[in-house]
Length: 309
Image (cartoon, rainbow, N blue to C red; front, top):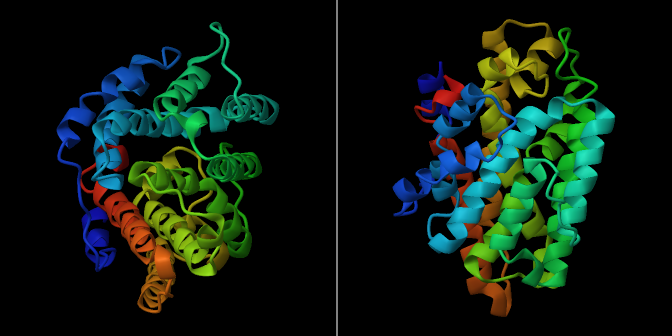
């Protein structure tokens, strides 16, 4: 199924990979082993998931000194989403509050859990607190958006008897759950160019960011249906469509692929009608190219990935 889907899911813009992708992949085992509360087999699964390769596909021209914390933060979000999302609501909210505190300047105490320490280390390595205040504020909002989605998902996922939202509700909730926006924000740190508010808030920029989130999350849903079903996750486009239409799985895939084709066409139309940003044209062109790398690199990462076998 996955190989046939790849034929359907290609983009007209290529992915790139960092020349040091082999070196950054070698860092992943140590990042996974930092989560000592995980059993060895769980850590082995994270080590095998090619998260260094995903980092190298997302940020293919990143200085290596930044590639390391970006990979650390990518391992972190997979551990956090796979493990902590299953906690009771009050416990999950408490951990999210501590993570928000870390971004506001708190430091985790020595005895606190590794999920807090790894988050703090990654942001220290990224020199997060030296970044522009406006960028930090919206980066914090991006994480809070994801955290809100995790809390809302609890009403559907991680139960023996899954329930499913209506398609319209799923679409809004899936936007929050993708965790794409913090990693989109980090594109500016990698490039060394923080967009000013008047450029960042332009509707075309906001739409382009939206499409990165939409396309990467829907690609994920199409390629990870089997894994997410095993993991008792309800927030999957194919699963929601199958439930809503009471249709065979093949029909749900057909509908999902049609919806995705419409989104790709809308994205390409946005790109074709790109506005003039005056003195910021060069910076915005570079930013837009990097967003394309996020989309195409994310899809390429799934190829032959044991996480989704």
